[in-house]
Length: 303
Image (tube, rainbow, N blue to C red):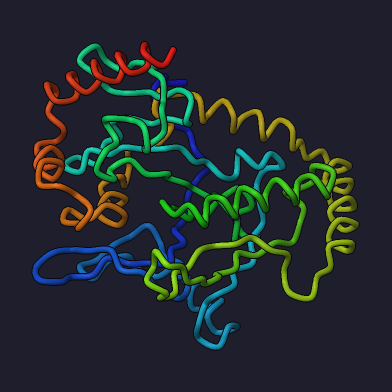
């Protein structure tokens, strides 16, 4: 296998709760109160809807707020990938990816492993450019049982909720997560920070009219039946793990400019003019180097 090539689950389309709109000559992210399922093809108006979008929408009175899904893997961390990520807004290339303990960062010396202090404490992350970046891979169609649709988010609410649900469902089912009848559910909440206007996040629940007891019983039966027919779930998960660690930066470079456009608008109120200029210049190497030196000094002082 070619080293440095990210091997992620095959993606057939995207699931989103937002879109990019034109405003004052700029392309800006806009939130929505429903799911949209798109293909991987765009036209001048944006992403083309996947046929599943219309099919599922017809069963939800036009507003798509529930999507029946199946997980590919029993291990929750293989279905949901999430790290702190700092993107170069000019190229869409990840500059730094960390988990709160260690990070992989592009420097003058190539990719280095450094301490990750989290966005609140890292000098390089000041200004709001470093965010949690989560990718949830789910299966929607029995026509392709190993193909996935990807839901991408930088929202703490969605990442935290999905991580908890995946862990809980895996635990109560005896690690039979891939056999549970699940659905993505769109939820809304208001906070002081959102000025009491609704914000939406994604939850993972059992499908309607399915009890937890019945879901667990069915999952055990499905798992036993698959094993009898020679299906090797453990080998599938091992293959996925090897694919994820095949590159220093797990994030697939394909489509990263779309990620930056959707989640990181060029002009935001919480960015100082200095930070804006840094990102417009692609985070010049000299600036990055000086910040890294300061970071190393701060880490040495703490230790």
